[in-house]
Image (cartoon, rainbow, N blue to C red; front, side):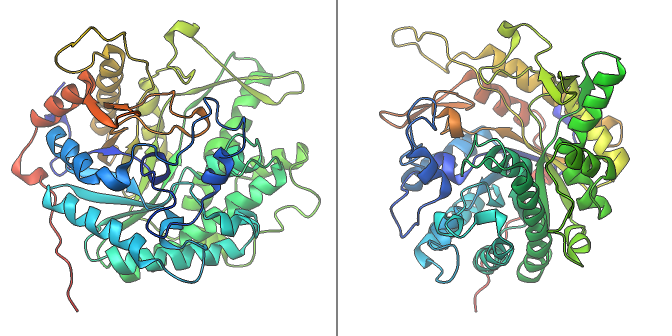
Length: 466
């Protein structure tokens, strides 16, 4: 397989998020985030770590841009820390916070790397959460104002914008299961949260188009193909229900302007919606959610294999032995990337698609004394190779795939898992903050280099001066 299978102008990138790498949570005027608060509660983070330092990217961003330059990527997907820009969630904009991202964007462009900016990668200001967070419709206005502040400052140079990362995780892990910040357990509340996230996406797209004319705007969804564990009617219905909650609850309103009727009926049947139904949907909301976008970002990690539980509820199963799973307990299933991309193309027809996250957590082998060269990680190399082959297959079948972002540039604070799970192309020694390339970083670098052509270079946008 060669990079020639990918079109000219393809974005080859790596991805990170602010909460997972920046650290400096009390510097530069940054306010507290919901993840700062959540991680401060004993037992919430499995290894007892917290994101207060993480990878210290706030101070080491120039070093990290150099890592990207050495990789040869032409795009970098990163997120803005909402509480660094609006410490109170609303009101006063922290100019110092925007200064940090202003310098980062200029540094990336100087290195020939296009910034691909995500506005919300889960680190909501705690001050907003104190007033209900995403359960409150006021959060829609707060996010719109935040998008306005950031895009006014960076919109002259940033040509790719993402509103939200994985709203399913925010709504269902954060507000239904309590496994993510803010740690709530309210199925009905989670549906309200999902709606407010989608609505704020539509509002923000309008703002981004006004402040960054000619730029592209989209949203990132975590998607998985869903397979029934057996061909029994019960398992097939469980797979349909899971797909409705996980995939179609977000895809259908974004591209069709309505929540899937069968999934709504499932939520009523499960007691997640009362007799009032979708009472949080106001006139005009669905049209706003379906505001046309320039691309859909797809985060893909694994397929979902589902069977019916004793009460018929969908239960995910592990279809392979444990020793074939990643350190997150996920099956590496490259074919699923091709399958979900083709399905999205066929059923929703987005203008363009980017694979905005794809990667795997694996532990490192015991280090040999003074071992030269990169850290061996053959399973991650194979993961990348197989998934890029699946992406190539999707392109060959007509999928408008325009970019691929490996997760992640380096090891980071992996949410509720802490720092024990390592996704990075670069190893991070958290005691010294030393970054060390893994073999997968060299493999990805060489793969990109084999197809580097002049047309693949990103356009450089200079700052508009008043």
